[in-house]
Length: 424
Image 1 (cartoon, rainbow, N blue to C red):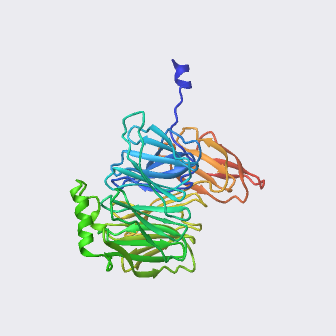
Image 2 (image 1 turned 120 degrees about the vertical axis):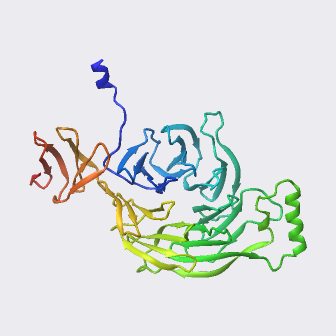
């Protein structure tokens, strides 16, 4: 029995890195944060200061994550388009899907009935699969084209009837989930660089498009002056009479007009990520210089600015309550959670960025793991929480070996520059 126990090992957690690529996602309650780490997904409990890694793994590195509004379904998509559907509570994979193309954006609708994928130049709308196992859990609803280059971002309207997509072709297109006679998908042009993010106002009658150069275009939904009122009413009535009322027929006979354009000037830094907290109309923008700024919309007044990294901010997220901001920096392997009103860090973690872990050592009591990497740093990790709590950066070359002294209160390191160090 003792031998059996020694051999029945199970995956527990992943230490050494906290963020690689892809979006960051807060849970519905705002107390947990999901991050893609290689081909696995890590979950950080921001209240209890602990973390765990889901036991499943993708074929390749995970590039996109999406969480259903109720927090029960997690979608993880690798950089070749292979999708994993996971049950969050049970931490198991329920179904697989090959989208056969690289996915640049994925988002659940607010009502949880649909999932939108940005694959190449197309937007695909799928019905949200159930967690029960079935032979065909995924059902494709509609596919939209119209973009001349790859899609970079997606956003749903609050009523889950429309989805906006922005792409590298400098266009924003607004698609209707349900087919309606008389409705033409809007195509919003005039952006000078690739559209990095699009957001609907809570009223769904205002759209914000943020381009890579830092221009924020504000579009408003208005009645078409060239549309005959009688024809518009007839088209809307036809939709209602068909028994499909409430699918967005009020958009027939309208178009989007550019009402304002604001410029976010951060020393010529490019926009790399952005997120809007719809309830408070707060826009968070991350720049290539490692700076993020907080703006009030639609006036675009700057509320808060801070430099949180020396590298590009690749991912930005805001908690459902709007008090916590999460940032991911792939270049440096950083994951930060900032409480902007109190101006304090809730979480600040960094792995061995741009380098491999060369060595590790367990403390005699098993309460600490020490790692040394090619970035010339020694880090101490807690196996219980999965967090790094001490970083030693005195070395100037890669650390190739580590050892704890027998009593466990000191650590000896051996770097390539030939000068060993002891840490107490």
